[in-house]
Image 1 (tube, rainbow, N blue to C red):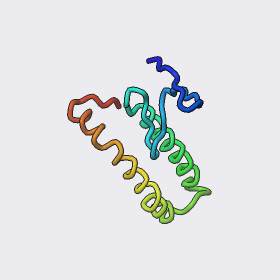
Image 2 (cartoon, rainbow, N blue to C red):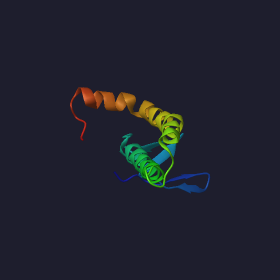
Image 3 (cartoon, rainbow, N blue to C red):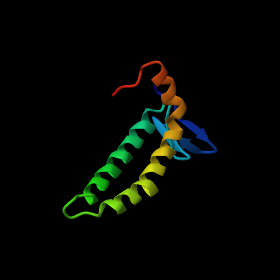
Image 4 (cartoon, rainbow, N blue to C red):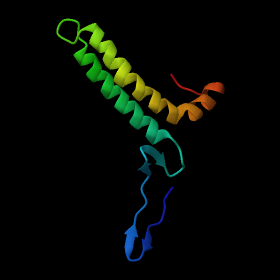
Length: 99
């Protein structure tokens, strides 16, 4: 949807397709697609780094990888889950989630 520009006290404000406010990405239609894509991107990047340092031959030992997972990865996933919990639970109940 095309939105017009606004002028407030001589400053031109141009609309953008999405915005980030308090760490949450929201688009013009108040949808969560941008936030979901950003979250998946961060998770994928973190997982790639985690996999890289967990190599059996040259990586960190298993005990420390478990500690890293429980102290860093799990809390971050839980934090992101809270932002999606209401949104995804509705879709899960209606069978709309895609694999």
